[in-house]
Length: 139
Image 1 (tube, rainbow, N blue to C red):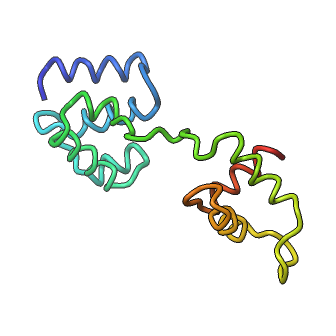
Image 2 (tube, rainbow, N blue to C red):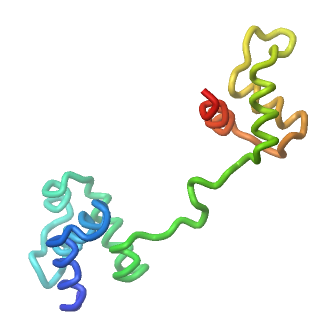
C-alpha cells in the first residue's frame, strides 16, 4: 500500500468520513498492511468485532478490485429498491388478496397468491416475498 493510500485511510478514520462500513474497511486495511503492523486475520477480526472471512474478503477485494473499490465498496448491478410491480399490477395483487380465496382454501397464503398472479398472467414470474412486500405497503 502506498503512503498516499495510507494517509487517505488515516484521514477516513480520523474524521469518520463516510459510512461506518467505510471506516471499518479503512481500519481493517491499515491493520492488514504487510508493511505495517502485520496483524493476523483472526487478530483483526477480534479487534473490530467481525469474522475472519470479512478480513479475507477485504484483502481479496484489494487485490482483485483495487484500493478505491475496496475502500468505498462496490456498486450493486441492480439497486435494491428496484420496483418489481407497477401501480396497476400492485393494485391487482392487493385486490386479489382482499377477495375470497380459491375453492378448497380458507385463506390466501403468500405463495398461493404469487402462483395465482402468475397463472392469471398479471406478471410473468413473482415470488411470495414480492407479494409480502406489496401487501405490507398497504397496511
